[in-house]
Image (cartoon, rainbow, N blue to C red):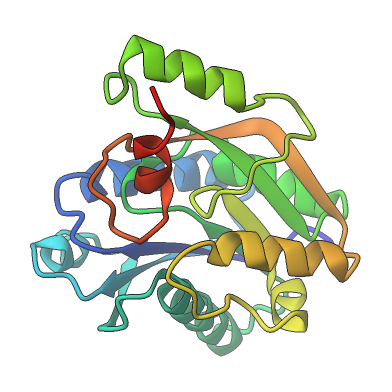
Length: 232
């Protein structure tokens, strides 16, 4: 893929009023960094509000450059797919042919170079970029952090897959049918399908997303459940 003409940032959210502002602040900064030298790339952020009962919708409404997408699916696979569909519709309506979709989560904070790095990798021909995550400092005990570092590679070519740090082209995504309507591991299923389809991909440690280390899960068998079962 050549350098994309548009980027849709997709963020599924389930009751994230406390952590969502920091997430959106970090995405806004990543957009600002990208626009310093590539202002021609259009960027739109889509927050998928999935059965939210808190003030997440009000947090989104206060952000002029964020588009809300509402659903009652209670299913992260469905929520992500709706976000990508909204981004695709926006790109088509705006006349942008080459769309890159950058994915994170409402309890996560992306680095300043998050979009800049993905755009560069797309320009180098990558159709799929798989980044890494790290738990937020203070959410895990020292013993748990030691276990985390022991089990998670921070090197290029790592084996990890996280929906909180994932980017791909619209064409590649649509070629494998998109996110499956799964309550968990929809990211793993999609990446597996894309790799099997032979797309050009990279597992990079260059962009590290910081995510919540909470133990109260928003999705069954998700990241919170993994942390709870680490055995520390």
